[in-house]
Length: 111
Image (tube, rainbow, N blue to C red; front, top):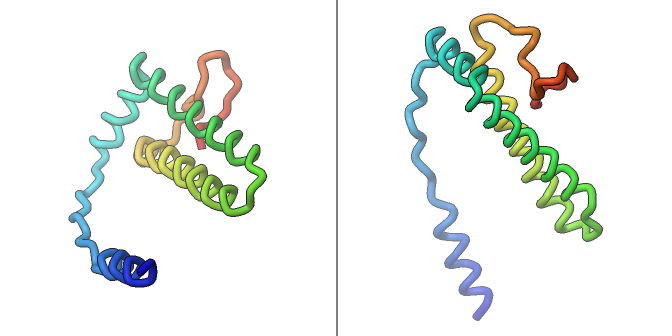
C-alpha cells in the first residue's frame, strides 16, 4: 500500500512546472533597489536577512543526524543564495564599497 502511495506522489511531482517569464532587470531597477536598501527600512530588512542566514547556518552546524544535516545545509545554502541574489541585483549598475550589513563599520557583506 505504501508503494502505491509513493508512486502516486512521485507521479504528481514528475509533471513539468511552467516557467514564469523573467522580466528584464534595468539600470533604474538596480538604482531603486539600492536606494531602498540604503533607507532605514532597507537597512532593517538587510539586518533581518543577515540574522536569518546566520541563524540557519548555526542551526545547520548544530545538527548531529546526517540526514537532517543534509536538508538543513541545503536550506542554509538556499537562504544565502537568495540574499546574495538580492545584493547582486542592487549592485548591477555600479559597485558600492560601503554596501555592508551593519552600521558600525564592520564591512561584512550579507552573502
